[in-house]
Amino acid sequence: MADGYDPSEFPPFAVTADIVMLTVRNGALSVLLVQRGIDPYKGFWALPGGFVKENEDLEEAARRELGEETGLAGLPGHLEQLRTYGTPGRDPRMRVVSVAYVGFAPNLPLPVGGDDADAARIWNVSDVAVGKRAKRDQATLAFDHAKILTDAIERTRDKLEYTPLATAFVDEPFTIADLRRVYQSVWGVPLHEGNFRRKVLSTPGFVEEYGEVAPSGSSGGRPAVLYRRGSAELLHPAMLRPND
Amino acid sequence: MADGYDPSEFPPFAVTADIVMLTVRNGALSVLLVQRGIDPYKGFWALPGGFVKENEDLEEAARRELGEETGLAGLPGHLEQLRTYGTPGRDPRMRVVSVAYVGFAPNLPLPVGGDDADAARIWNVSDVAVGKRAKRDQATLAFDHAKILTDAIERTRDKLEYTPLATAFVDEPFTIADLRRVYQSVWGVPLHEGNFRRKVLSTPGFVEEYGEVAPSGSSGGRPAVLYRRGSAELLHPAMLRPND
DNA sequence: ATAATAGTGTCTCTCAGACAGTATGTG
DNA sequence: CACATACTGTCTGAGAGACACTATTAT
Image (cartoon, each protein chain N blue to C red):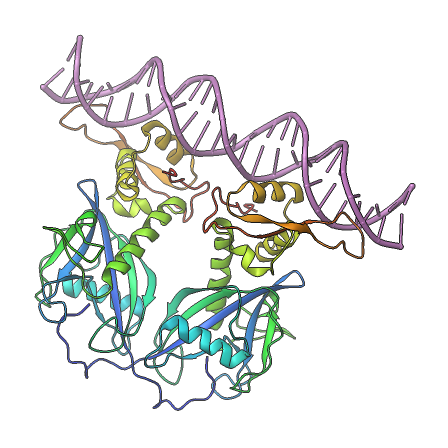
């Protein structure tokens, strides 16, 4: 850090916290977005977020903004810092440095409009435009939020390999099949049922027995054993993603 | 991102870029630090870094500050964003958000004092105090830089597993033994020579033949084949770290 | 009975780790 | 020659992937 400086001489920056809140809905990886009501990018979709307050920690700001803009307060699941985006010009109005967070949650309750009275909606990520041109019924993202979303998804795909965070996408208790659907939705590949089960159960601390079986579904089939999250923070060995 | 706001109402933050520049010297993982000349933390050691300028990208600021404070310009090697640290009170003078970068370089030329006229020195990381109390001949870090350094080392250890970035710590051309010394220094464990070689050479794109052999050392022994960095950005399969 | 979902057994191939042996240089 | 460093061959065990088989429910 620079040594001597006059505190009045630093260039003033605005600092925001933006959140990429991911969930798995109907077998598809999905993200919570809010629609902008004013320019710039009026009508475009954006990641929830906003200014960090004077005496507020960065993660604290992320959780507060998520609650204010989407009505999601005290969310379950997982939230971690992703990366910081600060290229000059990324906001046309002023110099903004955004600290992005990525979160995982089970089945989000459909958000009601928050304080900012913007529409909040959960989008299937494959319906969010990542290039310049949006097709019909696709969300187009404001600012550099497409890049942030892409980075978040990549991070998420990696994290499922070496951490037990797939469990953050499901409610407890869950079945091995529930967990497999998470992996399939996030990675976008089918996974072999029997091998997946053996792998999860042989990885220490991934899941623990819950002690009951699931009520059998309407379409029949053997009732599944239920599990809860285990105590491991890292998976040894890792869940390897099939290489294409 | 928040929708409507008055640009004059955002709380002003100072944004800095701090750099954890790592190298391997005499078989030990080492870090470049500068000694502070003024309060707060006068006499303590700190990561090089400083304010991001008004129209400067974050990584650009990191490279500039590194050059100004340590005389290292146009460094070879690798630089990537690590994480952002912004807890209120981490700098006693004002609210500062620091975007930290981590870099890897071969054998740094011993830095001369930079523009800021601070002493710059490369420390063996095991001689840097991570707790509250420093022993004799240990560097004590200013601000929350001990936490940043710890995070950087952890990230580096992970990155060596699944990327070919160990090659960023050596000059080209290098021998397999050079590369093995990097892994041993960063991970702090001995690695089996024959198995390490077979693993590196069987991982596509990790290294390429350079076409010559190294001059034999003064202590004898068969001359080693030389290699350069390969084209892979990720290692498949990964170099697994022994699990204690 | 059939369909559907849950769960097991077993074979093969890859790869990590242990370790012995060979190759080529120095003194 | 001894010694040092570079490199290779081969065995073993863990684990991933393919796939067939069994178990328990609904209709």
